[in-house]
Image 1 (spheres, one colour):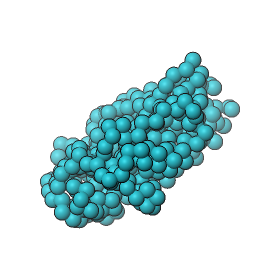
Image 2: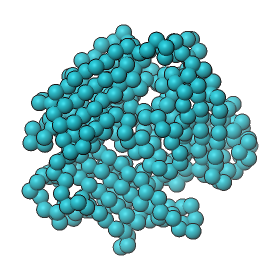
Image 3: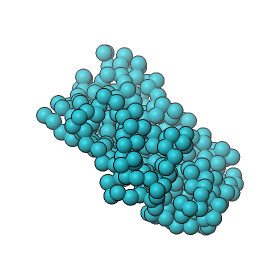
Image 4: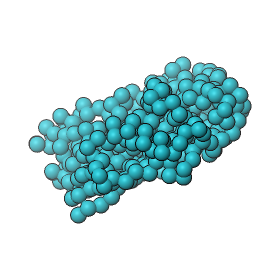
Length: 378
């Protein structure tokens, strides 16, 4: 049976991703100074204006205006002709302390969950990253789009951009790339044909390789023009790219955003633990595909439920896999923080090109796989 699966990604210059990066840059700086900082920072960006709001309880200090401008500059908005630049945009700050009603649930030694919520983790053996192929390719395309801009391989590429990849599957295995969509902000004087030809040559083919063929369809800047980009073209907001951040629509999502939140917020930290569990289960060979749902109640240290789904690819019973998961992974908020070493400034690196599938993060380790395999008798 053949089926098509599509995922998308956006560049670091996309307005939503600018906001994610600002929120996580603030979080990183506060955690660097005070590892027990409790942070929930939201950012909004539009033409000429950045607004940073939220709740912060910390012994640290951050110059929010400077940090926001640094992010915008590093992303590439350094020229006023783009309609948005780090030097001229206004930055408004509206931060206050965390509500004591919420704080009382997370200041105990056993650290209850910072809120109710459910999270999902997913892994599949179809790529070396143990991630779905469509989202893996989509992220690699946007990373490549940023690379050709920063290294001046394509001088007319500007910071905002998107990719979308449709992969054809046959009997559950990826076979080829059916469709690629790339939209890039560009210099107004460049011709559409040049954009299409060069994006295929310099961006798509180096990433997709033999997965593209004569039947692959390409849509490059399909509206014909993408000069106005970034916040002037579309207001950005923290946490609006949750599927891009996760598994690209393959598997489920609990709905909670990640960026700007300290690890007491389980919609972030428990999502990382769920990925860690899923990746180790697949790396151990217990199943080819694996999804886990974990649910929490505010102020309660243990999950209220744990559910797994192997999509029919399990090598031992799901009941046995669930027991192995419960016996080998501490899913309490404090257990997650300690296991994954989350009281460290690692968050800004997550805020563009996906939170999963890159081995620079602790939740991408497969250090439990060997024990899982042994305990399973495989």
